[in-house]
Amino acid sequence: MKNRNRVIAGVMAACMTMGMAAVPVMADEQKNSEFTFVCPIVGLEYWDMASAGIKAADEEFGTTTQIVGSSDMATAMTDMVNYMEAAISSKPDGLMTYCGLESIPTFVEKAWDLGIPTVAIDSDTPEESSRIAYVGTDPYNAGYSTGEAMAKYTDGKAKVGILCSSVSAVKEMKEIEAFKDAVKDLDIEIIAQEETNADLATGVDKMTALVQTYPEMNAVLCTSAYDVQAAAKVKEEMGLDDMVLIGYDDQEETLNYIRKGVIDAICVQDPYQMGYQSVKVLKEYLDNNGKLDQEIYDTGTITVTAENVDTYKD
Image (cartoon, rainbow, N blue to C red):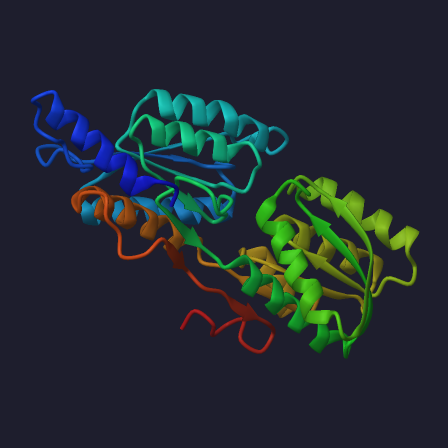
């Protein structure tokens, strides 16, 4: 964490020099801590689960979190810049946000300079960052698990297309790199990659185009929840029974596609725990004078297939 202890020490020393009491980095014990979660897409099932975890933590720890963000799928990612600006201007006791866009780390630094600690949720900032912690999936482990699933369901031989939300989504790109590592010694070739902006209709169009352009394609990796649903819709409607589909996240529609045998496997993350643990981490940080036992909180993943689709939550 970049120069955090040095900055804290400097502030305290300056206060003492001016005859002021050094103020620890912690919330006022006389009031509840107030946080802001800048949500990438309000109303998207994945992020609603994270928000549910945040609300549960608020109730348990006596904190209050304002959840802000765009519900417009077409502009949500670019709108995050405006929501981050507004969130920082409101001067909450702490911030939580998705840091998978190249523009977001700048705001993490700006918040830090103003004394606002930030927790990166779901997607981390680059290594040189002032975020106090990352809570979410290890993208390498997640991506590698999808490569293992692809190897299993294609018997190690496939022409693979990829649907991703955006090449600017840092976490997804890390997952794809890990996928490549997992299959590099097999007869598995990536022949195309398309962006969908995590939009279902766009995903259907891009999947249809892939099928028509690459008749040799027999497998698809999808790195967002809507992408795998789009691919499944096209596979089912076009009767592509031999097409292997590997994706992410356990939305109910996705699980139903697994039950029907349309989707072969998904990497399931835990957005509820991401939200819950982010509040817990911020509260701990403020209550303990800016100290944390760790900076990385891996919420884990599980591979869900037809074999465990109805039991993996047990």
